[in-house]
Image (tube, rainbow, N blue to C red; front, side, top):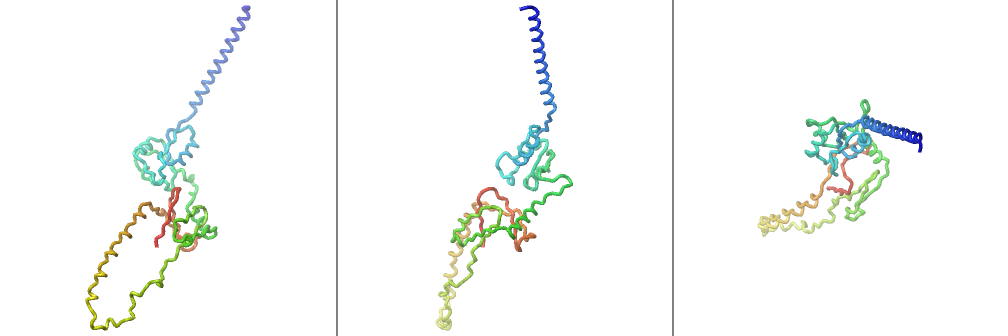
Length: 274
């Protein structure tokens, strides 16, 4: 091989290596610019899973998003532990739902060293806040007045009311209760037959018969109400109480009372006291 050919190959090899070096250097510079250009906003704390998903979708990889509650405790029942409060203080900002969904938030944020906080369920400045309660009440009143109704009669279950199931879907469920039996027609008054009054005119009437009330004074059978006082079968389960009660809302039939309950998914027993 001639010296000219060697020289040509050598020059070509130098040019190729120089080009590759330039590409590699260019790639390193580009990568460095991307890293420098990205901004990291720190740690964002959120109150619930839904808020965490919302914030994560917006910030992406530019921040670390965490939740206060890391268990399946219902949002109404959750109370931050000492460790949770420490995590909150170490965060740069806190987002929560609002509208009293998290009862613990107000008291917690009033403590010292808490980060800036923002409600996610709020309108921009100058906008009118959505009155969700009025919208729900109006919709409910419309359903009660004009909506489809499904009747449920407890009498048709022949005393076994526990077999009646009502599935909570949009619509009106009416429940007919048995009328209280106030008639005394079936009461046996034979033991109180006062037709023979002659017994009171009898001089031989034994007054001791009135003084001896042992059969009446012995109320042991009446005083022993253990069968009535034992409500363990009723007290062994939790009773849900209405969080809000609205009486006679505008647009609803007269006498309507709306009771708002917070119920988790599951089955519930409706009890009536008469």
